[in-house]
Image (cartoon, rainbow over all chains, first blue to last red):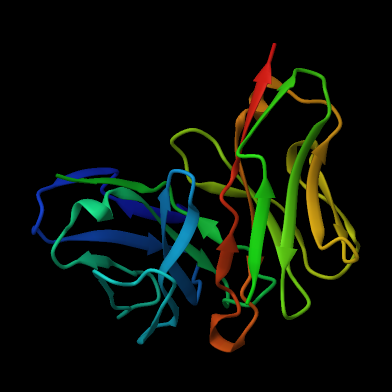
Length: 114
Length: 116
């Protein structure tokens, strides 16, 4: 199993550009999520999904869109990048999204917006 | 609402010394608590979790944590630090409600340095 994979590893954007961060998992997990990590802030939840076709907002959803058309994939779209979106982005998945489930994290995408 | 506070953004210990990383939580429901470790330029890896079974939880790499309800704490310890333990450690609590119950709320993290 590859686990949770993310592409790209690094990305530099100009303000106003759009892009999609890819996330895939091969563990047949129903729950997937996106977090952003900023220095001194820990990880904050952007969006999550409890199954294909179901998504919801987390703590910091503004400026990001998600969709979940398959169990395996959960892409994160930046519609119009802003410098405030410079961050490290982590995708995670868990079996059913229960309180006791372990979340498995991808290696991250480091995004810089100029 | 759930929240997590990690005391100390940086902790430095000597190799062989006790590691103690502090985590206090606030939760309106019985909490489920997690410790994750992040090595430089990597994703997060689960160290251990408390899911209301034993209050003393043993994890990987010799780490353990004790759930103390009266103190609302879940501190992480290791008897003897290794150089390889240098990393950032995150305490987290699961959100606990309905469809969002699996969402994690993280503390701000504690960076552990180990001196030779």
